[in-house]
Image (cartoon, rainbow, N blue to C red; front, side, top):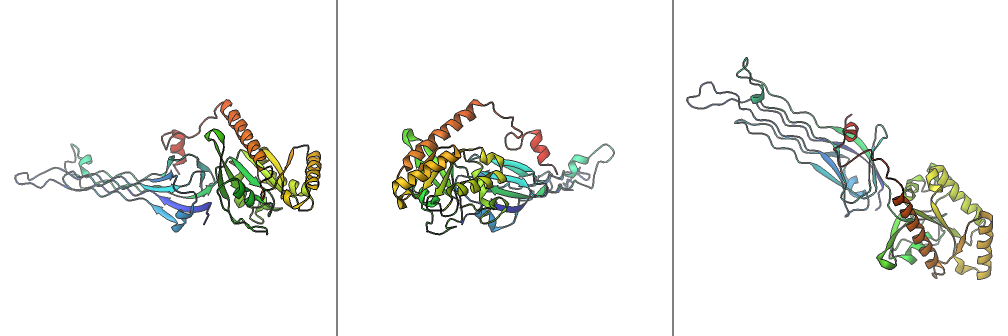
Length: 358
């Protein structure tokens, strides 16, 4: 089961209380204070793991609470620190504060981690409060409560190429043709109910990750059909392959409708490099298919390919084109000056400290 959105409560462990204790030894009738400190509360940490690719495991419970710190003891023995609670999440998870909607962190790399809430500070034992005017303090410090918050996790698949189009345009068949992915395929709309990933091996040990995005319908940007739940998975792709069913009436209208939904969801989606392909060329005469493609190309002022995901006709051509466009995007990205990082490391920056204070 594919789960790409979940809301959870996270809380750091409470700090352990300090101890009130005094030396009790023979021949030492007025022993001083020797109460130990409590232990620190455990943190809650989000960690990007290569072993999972969905948020399904996190849905097993709603509340994630780290271990409390232990209480201080006599003889200046400190309480045990609470264990950190590590929550494994997939690559491409966006972390948001549920109350404010603010993005806390976009976790894109395997091994990346963030301390999402901090455990409470330890309480100090009465040893710390001895003074010239109070040789036997009968009080200690309580441990602090751990931070807590509700957060929303949104998974955005990280793929090089997104495959889009209306329902039944042949996206799943195309993905099965070019990779070892085996999505459910049938001749009716909405066969694909969740995004599918496929890896295409290229020459020179290169490879591309393709994402089959479930079919879009008019109003998808506002949640109709499978809706904007899946539109966000296109945001991270560098290139879009737009498939159009050659057997459907009005290929131009079909193209414009999908483009409209992309633009209404996010203007950035409409700016992505795009490959347009008329699919299912095997079901029509070659000359008719070519004429449809040429007419669409003329009206859009863009190149339009004619392919068959079933037979493999011209599929290699658009794979090569997609690879070239991804290379161009990568080169452009590397040649641009790096954007200023607002957050650095796991939690060391002042800005991260501000994000974690609430």
